[in-house]
Amino acid sequence: MKIKFCGFTKVEDIEFAIKLNVDFQGIVFFSQSKRFVPIEFFDNIAKRITNGNFVGVFVNESIEKVINLAKKYNFRFVQLHGDEDENYTKKVLNEGINVIKAFRIKDQNDIPKIKETPSEFILIDSFVEGQYGGTGKTIEFDLIENVISYNSKICNKKIFLSGGINLKNIDKVMENFGKYIYAIDLSSGIEKTSGIKDHKLMEEIYNKFKNFKLNNFL
Image (tube, rainbow, N blue to C red; front, side, top):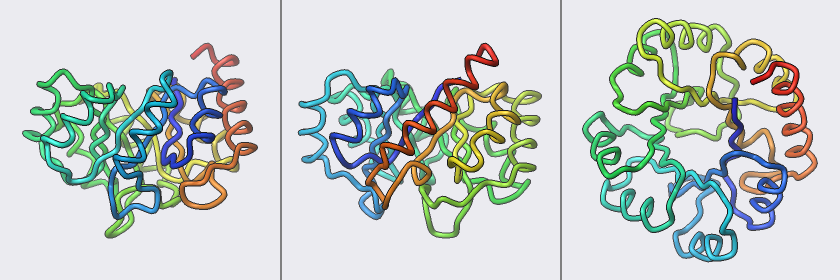
């Protein structure tokens, strides 16, 4: 199991995450997000930080822009967190770019959608009307269980689990689902305010994650 911290807006927060050995660092390029990072600002980040594993997060962006930025900055993944369809995802994959396709799970009816994506990696997030992630709303555990069950029987995708994971519930999340997912993903759960990370929280979360991995040989 791996860990991704998402929604960075400050260089020093990214540097601290890398120092902790956080596997992936997510940058949001969606202008309506409270954690939006303009390309010009990220360009400065990329020049200062050369050892990051960046995930570029996009919402209903033009395919050309996603592909160009992914190649320019050598993103570890592109995360498609909007309403991008299978053809969109396939075009990005065909450029040799790793894709995480996000699904906001509202109820059981949303679960079968995950089998349609050509991406090997998916992200499961909580559903909030009109918002594309980073809400802090905790996804219902029974929905996660059903996603994992469906995935193991039908899809065999690698799952990033998101949706309101924080210091209070991370132990329970890992105990219940750690053996079945590829990574956990936190944003609001490691923040002081939107986009500004709390280093103490980051370290406490990462230490819980590290100890769980050591104890479970993941």
